[in-house]
Length: 326
Image (cartoon, rainbow, N blue to C red):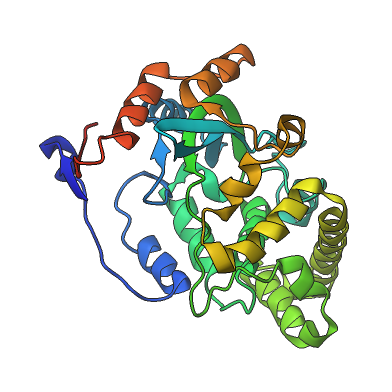
């Protein structure tokens, strides 16, 4: 597919081909930034321009906020329509979000997992560079260890806020990518609780605390606190996996993907009763209808931008050129 970009947009784009590991590419990206703000986005997804402008204005006006997240919709193309559903509805500001240090981390991890995912935010470039370099400074044996370390380090140093504006359309069409050193098939909780991994688990915790720059006299207490946070999270995660209907569907779809490919989850979901799909968060509507539903919940939605994204995604199959403008 050829991307036909307006000159005003293409003049600001720099494409870098780097076929290294995910960790290597993340560190490379952190060193290439030249703008005041940054947001990380996969290449098959969309941000709402008006929402990004809104978030940047907030960051410019309030120096106490390090990053901002909005609301998310997932999407996929099916039978000639662009379908979607709300995603990450559980995201919220951490109570006492202004806390820093170990208390900030404990507060951020006080629920079933974390309050939100700062990696999916618009943030100051200096914040992004520091968190990425610290997160990927040391290799993790478990692929999800990078996400976990990110969510430990971020609330130790920084704050993130949630704004009720739709800003991100996340693709639900492709499965998460694994590669030679980034295997997503093994959950962090399973890896963490496995006695065989005790030595590498301890090294993971030690390296995370070392990255925090804590006074040497406080390191042992910090290590103990972080280990307890991760233990409680892992135990909850394992328990949730054993009882969650959604996780049962995901486990079945993982097995079937080996045989039938990446679209198997959508097939499995399509044959479920509507009540069950609604319960596990897989009931899909047309994207424009999801936008209306979000508006009724008090979430700001740029409906014109949604229509433009729908037109872009649903370009006729015989037209392999997509035109993007700012």
